[in-house]
Length: 590
Image (cartoon, rainbow, N blue to C red; front, side):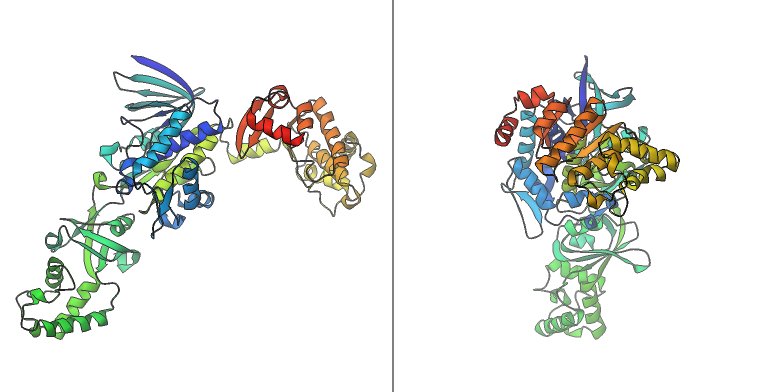
């Protein structure tokens, strides 16, 4: 049975970025109707598996240097706003207590991923966000007023209509948890250029004769990745795991972001010792085990099978008596310990990958809003973007941060515009600042004429006459040839209003126009603004002058801590408020 659902915004994907996007959007505007569409039978399934089931949600040391991909440069602005500590505080506001370890990795204090998912799900429930699970979206189309999505599940088939759409359904990593390539498939259909997904943060396949000996073992050491012509690409220190045909462990996972076929991974199995120090230690062992076979030479230094692998690579016969080892053989053993080399043959598949490289090209996304630059009102966040971080909470951090930014902008009624369209729109707007911003070295006449002359709005004589008539409108024609320094604060602000009017704007933006004035001068400015309102000039005013707002405004938007808490007529918002926060504020300013 087919059902139609109409929403202000729909988020495809109920993972980290999708959940955070929906929660943020709904908190910003409770009146908006928002839904999450999820392929799995429940939200946040992949989130439960992160950090070995503990959910490494962010990192104390967030930096673009920890990421690769075409969105890396743009990510700097996001990470300047959202540090690891800031993200932890955001979760604290949701009720989650967390801590970070000596590697900077943040975990819930319960050490269970369920705690992170629980606070997110609770927000979804209490905010009244609609959730549709087991919905395999098979079609997304752009329609006149937004988007239409359809699912192909026969028992629960839905058509969804929305004004704005968010693609947050991840990558091909972890297919058992729902990972697939649908995100970039949708985006390619919308005209986006994408980098094909490839496994990341995964074991690296290598060629070696000793892997079978080492299978199942772990060592702590330094891993270096070398590319063409022996160029060092990256090095990591930590635990290294050996499997039948690959190297694994966190430090190898981080190398997998860069590893290509035929690169070299070189392991230093004792990074705290120099080669010369090792030679002395091996000679001591030769003396200690002089009558024993070389098979025992590295006893007390390495696990037995690791020692055997070192000797095999060094071409030392295991049955040879230790005392018979030559100087070159000792040197060769030490070189192998310090630089055990493996040739990269590829990477494990997506079923072994924590994340994926690839996604939509960074230049096609506005990092300020996470909105597509190709399709208006289409937002993209999480793994669908070509950005992948190292192990340690970096990818979840980006998913949460991108989700927040997309959510903040999801409820805004504006749309993405090109630079040309933006410039055109701004040319029709005037601006009045808090602190006048008049040029002190120019007369009032020249201050008013400056912009129109630069924009060639008329001849010098025409613009001069316009300056006189505009200044007369604010009651200051007699000051037209005066310098700004001779004017009072109220007079300067009236000149600033006249300057804005010189452009014949469709709208004038006022940023706290009376905040720098004393009460008597404030009256002068408010009187001019009231006259402008009577003339029908559209004004957007940021102000704390409640009485003035109630008198002249057609609509009032009341904000508190960055959130819109009420919007309506002065009668509804100010004169007869229903919101408790507004009532408290008005009581204090009476």
